Amino acid sequence: GVDVNMGCPKSFSVKGGMGAALLDRPEVASEILKSLRRSLPSSCSVTCKIRMLASTDKTRDFMAVCAASGAEAITVHMRTRDERPADPAHWDEIVRLWDAAPVPIVANGDFFTRRQIDEFWKHCAAAAPA
Image 1 (cartoon, rainbow, N blue to C red):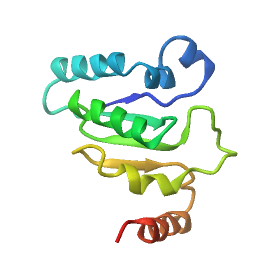
Image 2: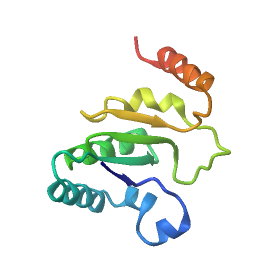
Image 3: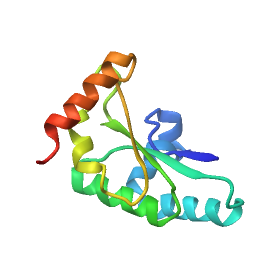
Image 4: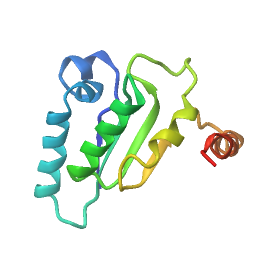
């Protein structure tokens, strides 16, 4: 498969219009995904990784664009473009994002041990609407 990293905040990526720069240009991100989907065999998965945008609605909209453009799964790094590993991941946001697109949504950020994964699931259960 091919995974398009639309979340890299490193300056060399952003200055080159790659990585997290694509979060500001959904039309370009869409064209990349569509082009990959057209060019690759159907047996090759096309997925993408993004970061959270300035608002939940903007993140959901971007996720919907990715799915409509051919992404078969979307990984969401649970930090914004300006946040770094020292900033805690926004696990609470996943319950507002997991139904944003009709493809699998993968949460990423602050998963270093099995215990943290277990805590994430507990957090999700507590935060999910009843």
